[in-house]
Length: 562
Image 1 (cartoon, helix red, strand yellow):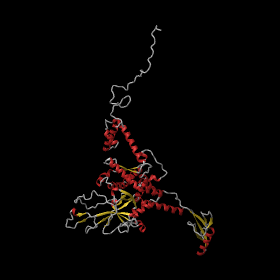
Image 2: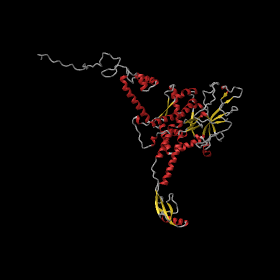
Image 3: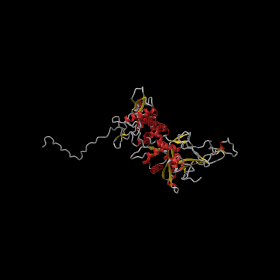
Image 4: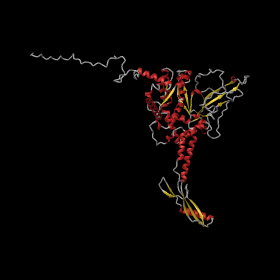
């Protein structure tokens, strides 16, 4: 085995498992297909039914599907909901409010996450990156580092075409039963003893062939015998899938897979509709020519003479604007000229009517709706003439709420790409260890910009209804209902939310942001009474005017005095 290209991160779980912890079931990753190589032999599943022969064939079919207008419109609806572009904010930010770490570590994580987005140019290419991942059902990135200085972290992140790379699991021969994931040791141990079962040595790596998509029209998947194929270490590649797996064939699928049949049916219906309208739209005439008792050869000659005499083959030249009589060429839709023997009704001209139901599109509308449903997009979005309703929650379609949850699951799955890159960056730069990452991984979340108003309207409407119920229950509070009951049953607050909310309210009261609900209130003014003020005082005293600086008034003389 040649040396793998790339690097390998330390595995905290390596060597820690007890020898007594055994299982006849090998460890598998449902996100990835299990391809086993042994003794240089390479095998690939071939689909006899013709649905798909390889993952490469599937990816090409998915990419062809997105070129159809209806399918492209549905994909754009999904991508636009998942990735929201804003002039000021980034489409995604790391959320560390639940991370049990210091502020310094949180700041370092935010800084490294921003570096990763800058290397991917994610703020500009977020729409394209998410769209490619959704269509292909998988995405590959190569994390490029400086092998002489790994502590510098990731230096570049490069996109890899899924047609040129695949995951390989190579199993070494361990005994006569080498094809089994687990082989029984033949050294005299008891086969019924679980400890006699030995796990085979399975090496995982990625096989990258830059020329695989050009071979035989793209039908060859990367294999170990290909010239120029490079084996890349597993830790050097970011691999994120859609989460959909064909368990019968161990093949990764895209969310477009269930729309293949609906799209093919829509295409056939549209094509057949065009052909039918072209062939049945015009009215054609039937000429019955009386040939009397002429022999067959002369009757046919007479019919041709009559047809050439009366047929007017006018052709319009769109480039020159001329009209000419072109009798040498047959039209696509010709009239019928039929001979009629003596004893008939003579020469007759009748009209064959065209199609009567040319304006019906109910079958096309049905398959368009079916296509949107197969892609989990509300069929109401198919009608572009419909407006956006900002009314009550009862007017919000249930399909829109389902669509919002579907987009949330897509975001959660797509965020695995950031997790992988962030893990590599933090470990290489010695910010955290591999053991620390196992504890912090579940607490790192990603906050996407959000502009779906349907869910916001639903939450606001529910909150208004809850507050209305609480206002109606207020006279009965303390008699039939407790405050704890209202918070649990009406507001649907959990115990953790209640504790956090009480702590926040206490802090805001101490800071003076909120008034203390238990403080005494002046019945006249309705304002809280200062506890340090004199309880006997009725307010601020009125200041007397200062007359010290004014001139003393002249007293009037007493009576009788001059």
